[in-house]
Length: 477
Image (cartoon, rainbow, N blue to C red; front, side, top):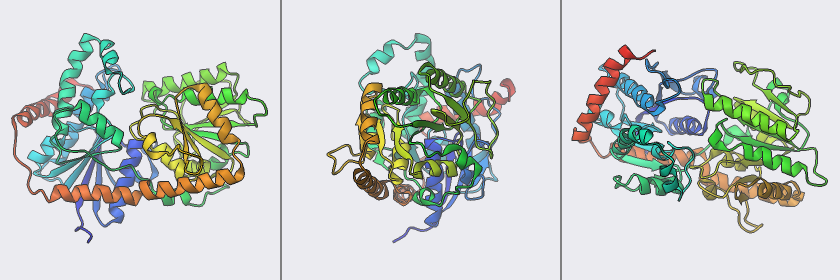
């Protein structure tokens, strides 16, 4: 029996373009399709850097502009992230704010005790991955001791209250979800005061969006598709995504005898505000040049152009195409193109990774690292069961796997595509995710009124007052 319609408020820090944002958008759409009322609250939403559904009326998005900067001279990102969410929480708890049956919070847990205590409302928290484990770069399971030795004393002092706040506020959620068994296991191991069992709800995708008819006459689609055999990568332009592996493997593949006229498309979200995005893009371009690969950088005509210096680009049939802030139509055009031979998913120890699932939905073979979430989404078993390849992140090893993928006979490729589509539909459809989140929301609501303040909540309330009332007076807006 379907539950009664719920009034749900989503709280997400920055509604840009990325895997976490894609999950939030699809989860909200899925819940709406199941009859629930959904509002999304965020501290940042740029119409030129977002998914279409957040600006075309498909979803109700409330952009609450924060007086706090993202950072101070490139530092203190997590401190200001807490401050920005507390300011957003104050907006939600004002007397005139709408009332909701339950809150769905992801990425940042700072607001949870306040929503429960002041809003008297239950909270479901979706854990992508603990920030505590990402503070020193990409998390590698089993390498924690070495990582700690490389952390300076000053950073340890700075991180201690931030890590305490993350763990203390996360465990106060009424229901905690995780995006994979990998994330659930690692979270329980490192946030040990959390006693409840984390329920796994895999990110789902809107399968229909990947099956929609592609406008072959659209100028943006024409700009990114080609009859040349194509390898693609869908990742934000961040160093931790290790997209350099795709370029190195591609260059090694092209050195092999009888290699066809291959090209590589590196598509992803790019935010010029973020130094990491800018430095990553430039380093990837330099890497392509070091292998004597021709390249081009393009942005959809419907989005604000990205200002980059002249880079001696090749506009006709480049070996590598950098596609910044691709549109939904461009993504579908690339994944559904008959010339697309594989998706390269380069991050190691990825918490889940929506890219492999997107490719599987479209029947595209996937090559991913043999760690983290992709080991749950991809089957690299015997040929009769395989939906993709899982390999150690080494360029030569990947080049060998790519050679195998490129050399697949048509019957083998067709059978693999059907297996991949079937697995994606069964486990990673948007409806499956929506049902999982719906069950968690209903469970939280049925718990009744949340308990009142604890000592920790009073301490955080004091910090809340400082951040909200004093912060705007001393920090630049």
